[in-house]
Length: 183
Image (tube, rainbow, N blue to C red; front, side, top):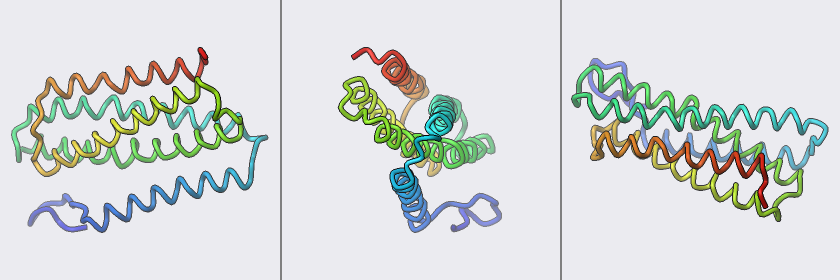
C-alpha cells in the first residue's frame, strides 16, 4: 500500500495489492469448491444452504446500498471531507461485505448445483444466467468505486439512481427461479 498524500491516513492500493486480492479471492473460491467436492458433506447440505442464503442476503444488501452511496457522493464536492468519507465508506463496503459475500455465495451455490445434480434443470440455468448478470453489475460497481476513489466519476446522480434498481430487479428473477422453479 502507498499513502495517497502527505499527512493523510488514507491508503491507496497498488496494482500488486489489487492482483494479490484478486488471486486470494479466486483461490478461496477454488479451495472451497474443491474441498466441498472432495469432502462431499451432503449431511451438512441444509447448513451450507443456510450459509449460502446469508451470504446472498449480505451480497444483495451491499449491491443495493453502494449505488445509493454513489448518488450521495455525486453531490459532494471533489476533495471535500464529505467526498473523502464517501470514498472510505464505498471501499469498506465493497471489500468488507460485497466481495466476500459474493465469493461465498458463488462457492456454496456451485457446490449445491453439483450436490443436487441440477445442472440440467432449466430453472437453474435461468437463475445462473441472472446471477452472472448480477456478478457483471458487481464488476461495474467495482469500476465505479475506483472512479470515485480517483475523482474520475463521469456519471450523474440520475444514472446511479437507475442503476440502484438493477440489482433489485435481478434479485426478483433469481428468487423466483430458486423458490418457484417455474420450469
